[in-house]
Image 1 (cartoon, rainbow, N blue to C red):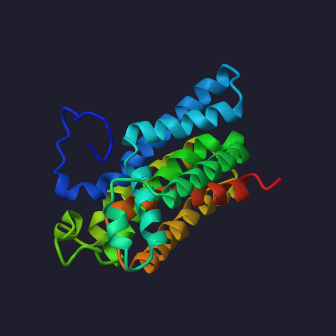
Image 2 (cartoon, helix red, strand yellow; image 1 turned 120 degrees about the vertical axis):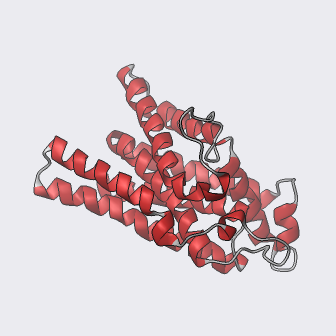
Amino acid sequence: MFYTILPQWPLIKPRFKRIARFAPLIGVLIGFLQSFSWLLLKFFNWPNISIALISIAISILITGGLHIDGLMDTADGIGAGPSKRIEAMKDSRVGAIGVQSLAIILILQIAAIMKLSFYAPLAFPLAAFWGRTSQIFAIENHEYIFKKKYSSIHHQNWKGISNEIRPSVIIISIGIIVFLISTNLNIYNALLLIYCILSGLITSILIPNLINKSLGGHSGDSYGASLVITETTYLLLLSIILAPN
């Protein structure tokens, strides 16, 4: 459900054709699972590097590696050049550029999480949220690369970004307000938190736009690539903002 290996919930039966609008929320859930594992293992004095690796593994396992596969296919397509791009992306075999992209992404994520350290539990749900929000911007703003053969199910049932992103924005906004009220942060820390959260908007718009320029559109694979690259970029950005030294 929701592009994860999670089972169908008993009282929630979403229609697949409108599933994209709920992706940011399921991202927050995955991020909270990563945060919980971080805090739990930290309680038992595990080293940060071990917890960072486990946190990344949790995300990959829950999603079934779907978005990682999209990242590698997209990297292979970009590396193959315009004439062989589609062929490379459809090839079930992973090329050298795809493997390199995965290695680079994992190294960057580990580096960012290690740098974040104390702030990592805060960063996980935010990164997962903005990563999946980037997919919504990709669907809204860019054409489907295979539109001559068949249309994206998301495009077929798209109601406009204002409608599709509304459930996520409402619930996340409520969560932020409750957190700010319950923690009684001073003005500086509250503004810093809001700045960190909103900085993800930049990456979630910029990354799918850059992929669009490289591919001339988007596909299911590039939606996954957009998610992974946005998450990674946002983690790096937070590590600079929250842990500059």
